[in-house]
Image 1 (cartoon, one colour):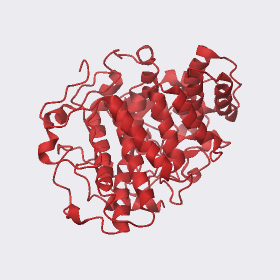
Image 2 (spheres, rainbow, N blue to C red):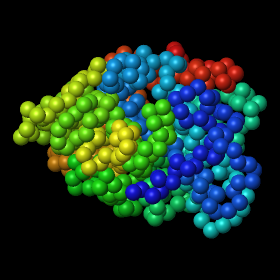
Image 3 (cartoon, one colour):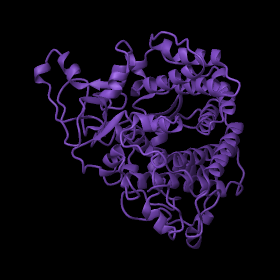
Image 4 (spheres, helix red, strand yellow):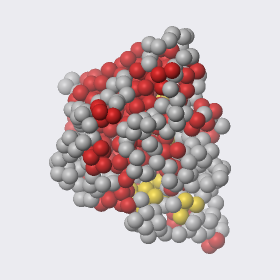
Length: 494
């Protein structure tokens, strides 16, 4: 299953980084395995292998899924105890600082992906062969994707393009202004979109639609509403994507690659790594970790009770909105409906218990990998769904200098009609609020909420402990500042 992803873990040749939770520095000059880097890229297969290596770091998506929910009003950290993945509990409480293992991993993993993409792009002109332009375009998209993750979290970050860094350079580079990083992201995505096709025969590989959808999102995050609207309209008017009829089937393994899929991160049921190296896994760590602790019953599998939805999220939905139960599993209500309810048991973790679980990314019977099925879920991460494209386009049209609320409502109501919710008829600023609310109903549990609250200025009102002027960004990991010679200024108020 998932042939493309199953080859990924063989490719550790090209990174200058370490991927475990250990203390190796993020710009380590010695590769994990030795091969003469200057004598690589001698044939098409070498470029393909390097590209697969660059794709590999997309598996870090489980971390953004966690932080994007736990840092918001949507979820708590959960787990066995408050010291079980302590960094997530600090993020939940908004007490995180520059010494946080989870934030350091996010920083390092995304730079690992950038380093792998840069290594390929540095050698783009070494030889020629048919299809090389597509490989280069995919690597360019991946670099943009990883940089976008970094600017969302950290703001200004060092911008390194098309080259590897020598030991002396590591302590000389500085943080690049976020605007310049965004400019490079936009360039990369435009360049990739100009080359790639709307269809890719290999499941999980980048398409023109993925490039344009991410570009529209990048514009939206910068309040470039007219550019965002125009870009997302290209995706919509292509008529390649459509909403599937049954919202409850969006996240099943059997329904992967459906008409709503713009960009998925591929996972398989193979193990690959361990608890000590979650980035080494083939499976989606989020799913097992978000499962029901010591559960014994139908439908679901047991797990570690991470990333638990809040009552605030559950209560935000209308009772007749099918997305409520598709998004949030009310465990006690579910058990009460079962014919053998008295025989169904589960445990509550000391890291917090809300009575709710993430029903989009949760371990289910029939979707369990081996051998340690907490680590081996084959459930893909839906990074960009067509519903998200419609809602981003609705917001962009509504908030542009020449607003088109008619089109904005059309896109918004297309999303609502799929789940039999009544049309929205508002306009202007009220329509803006309605679109933002719809994003929560449609996308909760998928890792977008915190970043939506920040970019829309709603975070301080929604998140307990959020400090304006500080928590819009996360701190640069202190160890990375130290490894860079102490030359990087920390984000405000950390």
